[in-house]
Length: 282
Image (cartoon, rainbow, N blue to C red; front, side, top):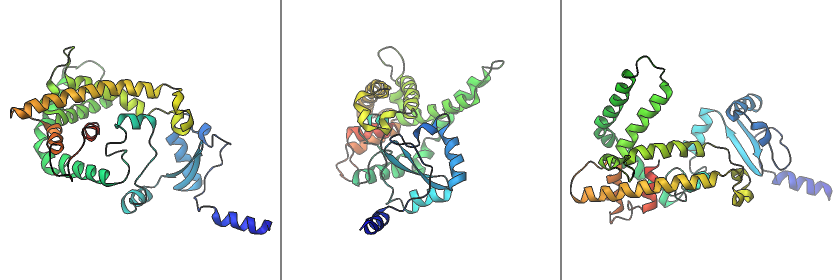
């Protein structure tokens, strides 16, 4: 009888790649302090390009080879469409309404179609070339004006990219001033910088969902605060762009494009307000 039970448990055991042993309850989590990507690289040298490890109660499979990653997310994308959502990601994507964290389904396919064929299509990118060039020139001019001082090239490059993306997204509505006299695009960049930090922060509630209600590290509260500001900015920009669009003036960028889709009677491309704002935050 014991032999039958052993054979039954053996055949029921899923076929998983090798991986390091962890501790009870917490798994391999305590060993990922410092720079986790360095530790994962070290584990890949021991166990191969595909290995497993437990982070708390969650079983994770790590892919470190470009070939395996391409196989999983390109050739076998129908088998790996969904992912675990962090607390910050859930709050910052309007309940997974955007293309990045949305679950596989008709809504996700519609959002991907809009993003690929409308927002980042070749014709749209070509049309916004002058906008990107103008923003890059502004940053280069700022570098020349800072002769004799230390310059962080990484920060300057990120700033140039961010300014270009914001200009392409908002169009003329981004130049509208808020109540404190600061342009919406300036506030938007400030809040997005903070949101990026929060998205990259380690949150114990993501590994142990039962602790989510306590928000021990305050990441949930901080994300809600940032999203409150961002939501106000998005609503102001949407309202202003509707006025500009109604008057037939102004360059709307991606925002105007999405507003036109929102008003579209074709259900295959019509999007909700939350989906519109989540796409703008991509």
